[in-house]
Image 1 (cartoon, rainbow, N blue to C red):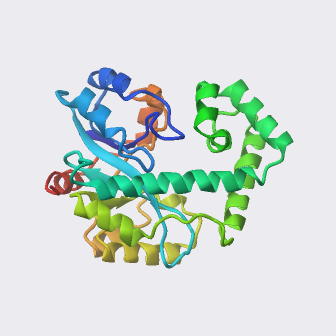
Image 2 (spheres, rainbow, N blue to C red):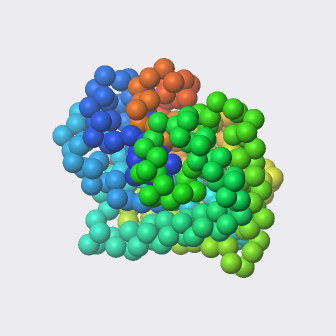
Image 3 (cartoon, rainbow, N blue to C red):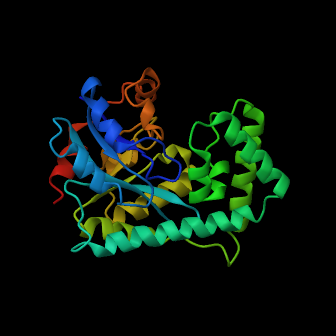
Length: 287
């Protein structure tokens, strides 16, 4: 069984593709189970219900939520939340409020970063986006101008693209030490809300965090104390912690363009990563 529990739609600020279109192409793919995990929002769940309610393939409710650890200060971690049934705004209002709060923090962080770029740099970034991206430019700018600097993987001039990413990373690290830098909520608060609403928290892409391995292992230990249910497995680097804490393994492509779903490019990103039934059983029994 091939599963992909880490997908993004146009409900993510860096995502592309309609959930309605995804529902049409799933029957023609080898993927059996998916979860759309848009950043810091549950707004996409309504469309998941609408378009996959009678679908023969399984779709789990998900979100990718930003948080921080007391161990690493303002450093941002991403936690995938999975629910077997849709959280309802009436009864689960706190998790909706938390996601809206985090989205607001993201916007404020972007505002801080924008101020660090010159008008000439922003003009160049805009021209890059216009030339090499297929997303609707007007729509993107309306959501937030700084989105244009975040995901420029498809830019032809890779060196300049890397320069922008490195500049952004450096600026973010520098600004994160400022008292004015908006901070994401602590992981214990995020985990508490996920678990209270019947969800399972899973650490996303542990191999991407640019901190010392020993420090990341301490953060994972902290997450385990707060109810971590699993870790996305990429290279087996943290298998010992999965064994120690009896964590489930979760796998996904982190695809940000649903128009690529089911293509060779999508399958190559999964790279024979088959979902273990353990995490699916854990999610199924979470409510």
